[in-house]
Amino acid sequence: MGIRDQIVIIPGVIEDPIEGSRIYSDLSLLKDIYMDGMNIKAEIGVKSINYNLTNQSEKASNVNIPNFLIDISSIFIKKVDSSTSVIEPRLVIGYSAYKEQSNNPVFDTDELGIDNNLFGNDRFAGMDRVGDQKFYTLSINYKKFNNSLEKLGFTISKKFYFEDRKIWLSSINTASNFMKEDSRQEAPIIAISKWVPNKNTDLSAYLGYLTHSNKTSMAGINLTHKVKELGSFGFAKRYRRISGDFNVPLDYSEIYANINISERFKFIARLKKDNKTNINIESLVGFEYENCCFAFRLTGSDKNLSKYEINKARIYYPNLADAWDNIIKIENKSRINFEFELKGFNASYKKMNRLLNNSLFNY
Image (cartoon, rainbow, N blue to C red; front, side, top):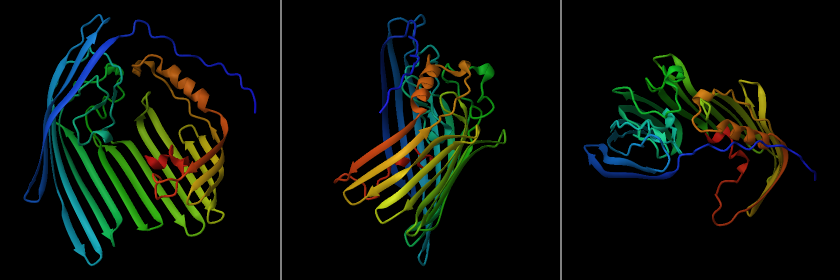
């Protein structure tokens, strides 16, 4: 028990905020075709944005933007005794027309990462922008199974643009554009791999590589291993050259251990580190009891979230930096955590351990 006195700065009020209504619609027709061993998915549609604003000096542009997408894939299977190899080539062709939208406000929109729009026409999360693009994506996926267990997997994909895209969020300063020589001009090669040498070990990794600038845009690795009767251990690392609301590098690593003390009682520990600043940003240690009906956990945790380096010219949403400052002040503290979980009909068959829900192992 205790008393804590803390002064929190509330983000300032936005002066003369843009107000009004917005109607967003996405109408499309889809057709699935199977022909000579090929799966063909065709989609054509129109996305529309209509504004009715009450206090904007420049009138917003209502837009109707046609688009289409063709997704062609096939599958080749080879079986030898208990081993099965599968190869899946894929070609996606997409088009979304260009319509000027720079006068339109931004209420809830941000740019999607290239790994989230390899095969689709959507370039933004939210409903204030419809991004233009003309592209095709090539991809090939290989999997090897042994007695129905996936032992090896590998996927490599690359998105090619026929021309530079024109629609971007107005928060981006073209003169100092940090992405100008990277993802705006080209998309990285995305490679994803998985190796399962046995039922107790799982190794996966991914890489995004920009061939034009010879730079790594993102990378990650996961390694988990179970030791019979002892418990499980894991290591994860994530790197993104441009990440988050402030478009700064992310370089995190994490280790965890679940050590069995008895059949139902275990010791749990986790440590997450910011490799760029060499600071432990999150740690947790404690005990867990679990049976068929409930789980009980008692842990101690500590957070020391990294402070970002801010470039205000790159921020669109007002007071975003203040909001993140408040989150860091709230989260950066030590805690004692108590968790009690009942397992009912909706529970997973897997053992429940929500302590890793915010873990790098989930991404």
